[in-house]
Length: 178
Length: 456
Image 1: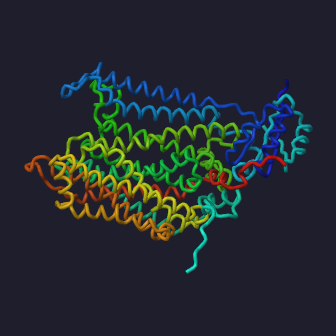
Image 2 (image 1 turned 90 degrees about the horizontal axis):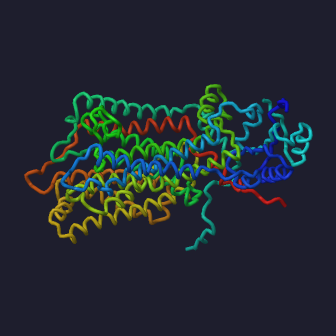
């Protein structure tokens, strides 16, 4: 397949309701490489676009567990194996004293995983993206709602798809340069 | 006398008449369009002067050692620990607003969470300075971290002072991440609305290419909620660990089980007072009354009243247990607080923290911004006095009269404390000048238009 000359099409809508309705229709029509761009999270878009649940919670759980187990083992190793220091005849493995640091490291590793994982799964930082070539796309961070279809999509047909998007009530449909 | 009808619904969290565009423009204009005002320059100048005072105090401390402070045996913990506990407590309201109120789906948090989180970070930064400077040889602070070293030494993990290191560092990191992640979509707004090239470049770098993709928002919201879920127990744990510094000791007045909850409540109390101290001038100067409404002030006033009552309960239980426990040293500590050399401070503390907030029972006070501003200042002072009373009165009279003594702060103690106020204010002035002080994207979500309507 030859490389398409444009990145795709971008349709602009006035309200989140119009966008969600349009997104559902586009997906029904069989388009796969679609995305929406909104100034704030719109919950209903997930279902309309068929966004899959993210594995982020699982990653955070694993990160937290790593911090928890690693933190405890570090303390156990330091105070029992590597440098046993007996203070006042207290037991070496005085586990209640290890709880606060274990807890803090659980939170620290879980939190770092949440943020780094979110950025990595989203592919950020990404300073260049073709969508930024459309001047009106700047409104996606203000008050407009956008729907994009990539040219790589199997059903994509430059004129046909643009006409379809206009039929869905888009106020403007623009071609996105690469 | 006419009876006013009771309002049917709570007052709005945003004044009517706003649209997505007007919210965006109003908040971003503060950063992007407004010229730097004379008031800002004067405020920044004063804050910067006190930051220089801090630099001098720290510089001299590094040269001469902590002998320049008033600390000595028996009162080895003076202003440094008082300020540490006070500052870190102030931070707690920010996390409470951003994490706990988010999990409880309280919409009124949206317009105050951003600068409350900024307040948290700056307050924790100020707090973190004190234990470091108090180390004696601050340049060896990294010895507190567990890292492989040629001395094959480990920190003593059974010590609450090491727990502090982990708690405060984790708290700082998580607060910073939470704040930054919340800012990313707003940086994208500033990038797209900035009139200048450097502005577009810098905000563009900070926004990391955010383009509001639905898939991105989905992961973003998941990450944000998970962070909130992790931050919530973290807030409680941090001040609990700080209270362990005291409670794990044997000293009368410190060795009590009420300390963790009572410290956490006190932290939230002083934190909300600080949020009010900052919010009231901000909304007046930047005309933000339609975003930070009377309802916000009222809600914060109610939290202030509630946590104030918990703190009062803490004082009561301290005194009661001292009497009921029958330990003569504990009894003497309370008696000494009431009548000893530091008694005026204790009475001032009771006035500030227990008596003053009782006026918040009146709705007229809760809805009056000037009154709340004065109360918040009094509560901040009271909470600082509380930390002073806890640290100093317990240390200066312990088991043996032969080891009694007094603590008087020196000019360097005062300079360091005032200097951190300058550091805090300087950072805050920079923040309100260069970053959106209200979360723009979260404000958009509370408009009725943000709700998706079923197609007719």
